[in-house]
Amino acid sequence: MIPCTDFIPAYSELFKILEELGGPQAVEAFWRTLSDEFLGNLRDCVERRGLEGCWEYWSRTLNEEAADFTMSLDLDEGVFRIDMHCCPSKKRLLDCPQIEPYPEYCRHCDLLYRHLLEPLGYSYTIDLSQCHEAKCRITVKTVNEA
Amino acid sequence: MAGETKRVMRRKASDNLYLHKDFHGALSCGIDYLDVHFGREAVVRYLHRFARSYYAPLIQEIGERGLPALKEHFERIYSLEGGEIVLETSEENLTLRVAACPAVSHMRRKGYRVARLFKETTDTVNRALCEGTGVRAELVFYDDRTGRSVQRFTRESLR
Image 1 (cartoon, rainbow over the protein chains, first blue to last red):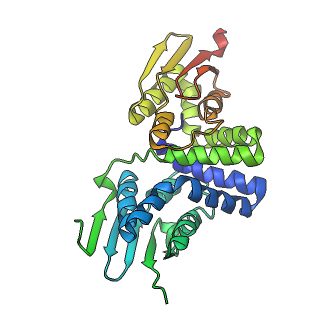
Image 2: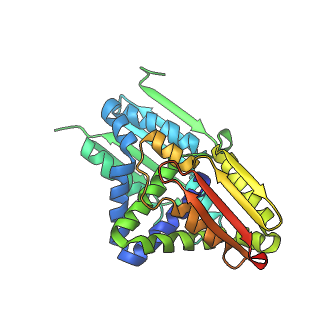
Image 3: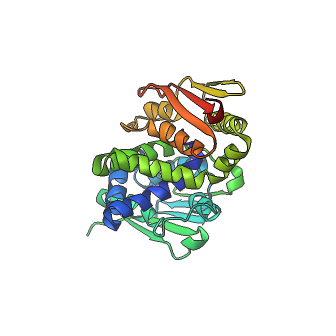
């Protein structure tokens, strides 16, 4: 058994072998599949509760992942935000000398959630400019219909 | 909190224990994807490569200390995941009996699909851990539905 605490390096290595076997498009195709098949609980939360569903979903996952973060929700403005001060996944990869992280590792968080949230009527942006320091910012906004 | 229009949550890493069992579902999805698109060989190659690189420090320990190092590894990971195990040890053998794989149990409970080749996370990984260490890994029994298993490790010089 691979314990869940060892999942992140296994995940990064999976991206590497997918790229080796099918190029970068195979990695992105897998991320779309993962979004469709694995993130059903996020989809359920958002379909039921809108932006409050984002709060509900990430309240559980980020705490279980022992992340260092500030999460905010402003229902008046229609904005949900995660400021990741130290991403536990990226930090694990950076701290693991025997594993070279997949170079585009952090992009999975862009594709996975965008793929799910945009068709539900939300804009999704992620600032990965500091991801080499395990920091990023995710913003989900309600899209106002014209 | 319900009904408030503005909320903020601040957490530090030290506020929580790192244990996100849903990751088992993501790993299962990845194994299934590799299996469907690239075949069983790709799954085995992937898990073997991962285990040989990520567990390199453990593999070195097994090479130096043999079965006790493996025993400590299994005690640690099954305790962490809340798995019920029995470890039988002798100078020549280590037998690990797992009542139900905690990863499979979690996925069944949460409704995640368990990959056809999920047992390779036990079989291939164990073989990779033991390769070149003087210990032989054998998956004696594995129940795909529950992950119940019997895993045996034998000192090669005594076979």
